Length: 302
Image (cartoon, rainbow, N blue to C red; front, side, top):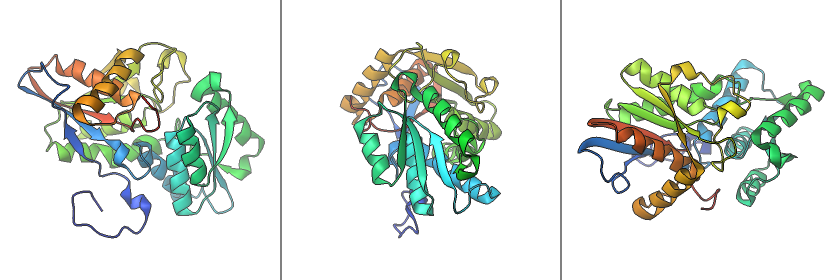
């Protein structure tokens, strides 16, 4: 069932993943030339509250299809929050138990959501961020490999495939093929890489840009500063046209502006993506710039 179509009864909450709306930004875009549009895809309207619902569902279905996820095995992965919520939701709906390795300083909101969905949490060193969670997860799986199915959002090509199958086609259809630039933040990089691959298949002219934290020590949760992080194997920078750095201050400020001027409750990583989208838009005489808001500020209070 897609949003905007005749209302029906979904067979599962998992059918409510994807089909998120695209909204034109009008008040934070002051100063752009008349022929330039900036649109934001509101991924917090997925059933689980973030863009990670798409990858979480695809990662489990991929395991089921390949036979690597079977009854009696437990799902485990490292996450800072949103993918964990997505895996917990998909696991509950599909009937698979889930364990999540998360930094111990995750917000109370995300901890409560994960536990409400029935997932077990193993905490990792908060000072090591998601990289520490990855290392802890590696050790747990290595100790009892037969017990676990690890979808591994950082290495599994099913992550970008989720966006090739869903996010890219939606953006293309919603803009009626008019999109000229796509901007997304980089964390696992699955959203940016998968969407880029689909858009480039439709039109090589589409420029695809990564929003990356400008500093190693930043507070744009969910995003990675690649020079100082464990680089996800699915990250293919050669497929991207440009990487634009954004500071924590600019990301936080833009999130506040989106809330106050557009009524959009974007998280700080969403604010960072919009900040970069506007930087790109200011260069243009005409064009359609699309960016993606991965979640809302409900999980990351402003």
